[in-house]
Every structure is written in C-alpha cells, then in structure tokens.
Image (cartoon, rainbow, N blue to C red; front, top):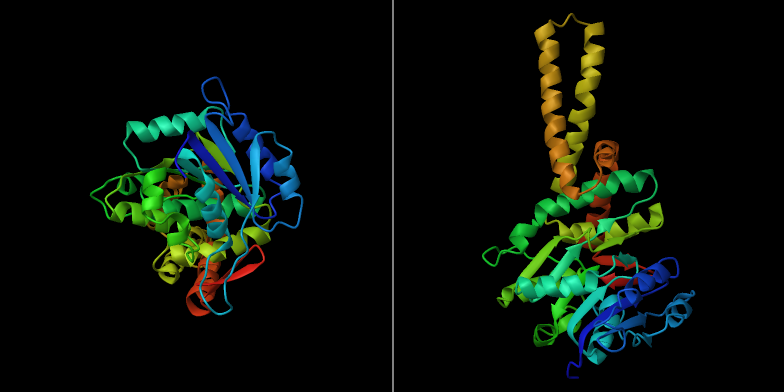
Length: 348
C-alpha cells in the first residue's frame, strides 16, 4: 500500500485495559493544525486476543482504527510468530504512513512528541529512531530492581555506540520504534523477526547490518512507560528478556553478588572487628576508603539508568534479587528453551 500520510502509529494490545486509555489519550492529543489525526496521520490499535475491556477502550476513542490480530498458526514444539510480531505485521501491512511508529500500550507520550520525533529522525538522517522511555515504577522492589537492569542495559548498549555507524552494537526499544516505511518493508519488517522475543533489538540489527542509520537515545522528554503493574508481572517480564539481552547472564549475576558482598560486608567488618581485635586508626580508615571507592563506582554505574539518586542507592538491597532474575531467565530461556508471556508460551 502506497504511503498517503505522514505517519502511522501502531499499538499492539493484549489485555491492556489498565494502561491503554492513558496511552491513547496521550496519542490522540498530539493532533494540532497541520498534523491532524485522520488527515495527516493515523492511529491503529491491534487487539491481540484480549479477554478484558481492551477493545472497548480502544473503540471509545474517535479517530482510532481498531483491528483484530490474525490468529496465530504456531505448531506445538516449533518456533513461530510471537503474538506481538504477528499483531504488528498485520497492522504494518495496512499502514499508510511514510513513517511507521510502533509503540506499546503502557506508554504515555508528551504533547508534540510525535512531530518532534519525525523532525529529529530527518535532522539526523535516521532510518530508525528509538527512545528508551522514562520508567514509571511503583512499590519497593520495582524502585530497586529497575535501576539495576536499566543501568546494565545502558552499559551493554551505549546509545552513542548504537547510533555510531562504525560500531557493531545495535539496539532499539520497542516501546518507541520509528522507522522509514520503505526501509521497514525492504527488510521484511516484523515478519522477518517473527519468532524473536526481542523483536526490537533484532530489527535494529537488521537495519544496521544493511548500512541503514540508527539513532537511539534516552527519551524521557518524549514518553514514559509503566511497564509492570505488579511484582509477579515484573518477574515474568524480565525472566523472558534478561538471558537474551545479556550474553553472559550467570557471570553478570556473580559480579552483582560480589558487589552486594562488598557493599554490605565491609561496613559490617568495620563495626564487628573492633569488638574482637584492636584495629589501628589507619586500618579502620583503610576499610572505610575501600568501601567508599566501591560505593562510588557502584553508584556511578547505576546512575546510567537515569533513575533518581534515591532509587539508585536503594538498589543495593535488590542486588540478590537481580542475580536471581538473571539465573531464572537463564534457566528458562537457555535450558528449557521457552519463554512465557501474557498467557502464551514460545520456543526460545
């Protein structure tokens, strides 16, 4: 289908009644003179077999097109299309925009961000533009675990290197993935990565391998996301992803446990040892300096997550939980060779 609009925004939604309304409200509010929904751009929601009020919420917004995702035809024991890839490929085939934006139902977009994103992509001559959203977290464990994960992501996939054509590192965030229509279809789109759980990273690899230009950055100015509504959902989500995102998840788990030991063991030794042996002042000071050095390096690392300082400090207590999530993901993805997400199980 030839492009007849500036932009098509596509939102896959499977049982997203808790978040979809806020997402769509932030998107339909983007319309302004010269950039009107239905005339200059279109918004498509793909209902991926929802059993809650997701479809009704989407249909309640004027100007929003709601379609049903085609039935998955995956055979037991074989790798096939994931639900998200299946839904987005169906939407993309009917899209009319010159630019295609894939975004998740748990995102909220700031006013004017769609137009700014297209201008940014054109300014930097990017064939793919992707943002890492500001993370909205609730509850103690989300506040402490999420900074750890996003700091490791920032280190494994540095935005400057992702955006550098000379670097082999490629990444993208499916919560905001803007691509040139022609490039997307030339590379096969979501159909070409249909069996991949991390379809965003795989698409980025395809773009970069074909010498197309990526631009990737922290996009807290453009959108935010509330990824998980409960502790259980957070565990399921990161179990699905961590062992794929990081090449050596068990080694990473070990290093973070060492951090936990150093950050907590050294202060304990400083308190306990004087009760049993007489430490000279310089020995006590040496312990303190070592601990401060470890703490400084740790906080410098975790601050790459773009989370508040308070959450970064609190994240120390979640290091064992992060290590457990890495181990759990490795067991599920690498040993059992399967991932579970939103009521479906896929072969890894």
